[in-house]
Image 1 (cartoon, rainbow, N blue to C red):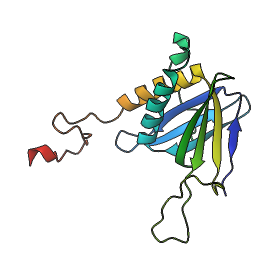
Image 2: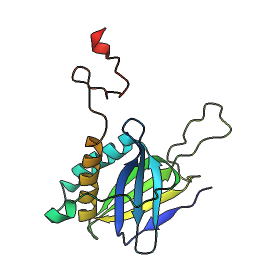
Image 3: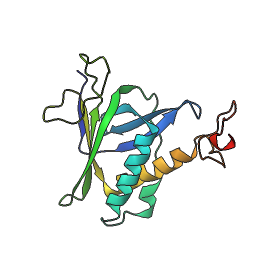
Image 4: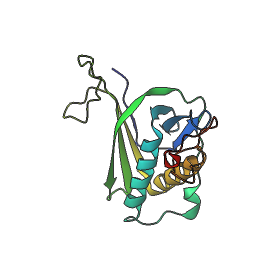
Length: 172
């Protein structure tokens, strides 16, 4: 079983990618003054988390403008485990956003290798991060910048263009 982590006084929270567009590996990092952790996730998970955080922040007081500056990955980004499920909550009393990231757990007894969703007793590790509104806003800015660094979309179908060519379904 992988190790679980919790960061209550977060000094570092970001998403980033390593590699060339089309072959990038995406990471989520969180940490405090003593340590940090990286977990691997999909590009779509980064985008979905940023979109959801944006809707959450719309109902909260606005952070200072300088808080929304993008943050970089701390290298090396060595993942502890792969992300399965992500949950977000808001603690209005403390004015923080609480992020719970669960490890993807593969049922080794199942030939189909299906990920096990959230349960009452998760078997995998978790990462719990207590973010300020400003840190959540910075994550959104970082994610938006990260999404623009990918492969350009095809003007006809919207799918990413490959450097080796693109078989556009709209041209068939």
